[in-house]
Length: 166
Image 1 (tube, helix red, strand yellow):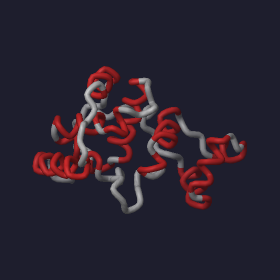
Image 2 (image 1 turned 60 degrees about the horizontal axis):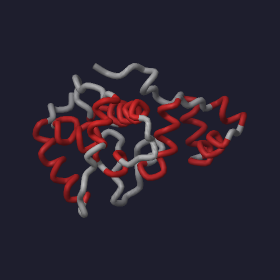
Image 3 (image 1 turned 90 degrees about the vertical axis):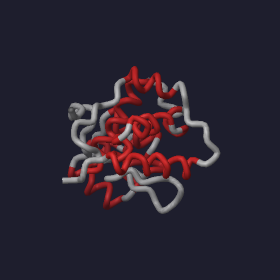
């Protein structure tokens, strides 16, 4: 079951065109209150939370630059193929210790990431995150000095469990 469109709407075409034309500047001005851009690119609470707390590193469309920060677009859904991977997405320090302290809002952001940014990488039938699940998972953040290796190991176990993309 996919989350409701209210929790995970895509940015509108006019907004995407505007953002493409002005790059990250459009979002910065929009969030700062630029009236013309605010009207052209209305973001909901979930999208705003993603952009302000996650988009700086993971990219406004889930595509980070080549670095140790993973891109989310069309890849992050693979983690949901195992309970371990699903839990990792919330337990990773950038999420579990996020400044988004409201578990319901963080659940919405995680659902936006998994279902919208994850795209075809998210298998059908994946349950949306709930505020209670997020609360329980973030109480036990990942403790690792080598997140890259840990992420690779978790993905290595998740990939064989994923149904083939269709």
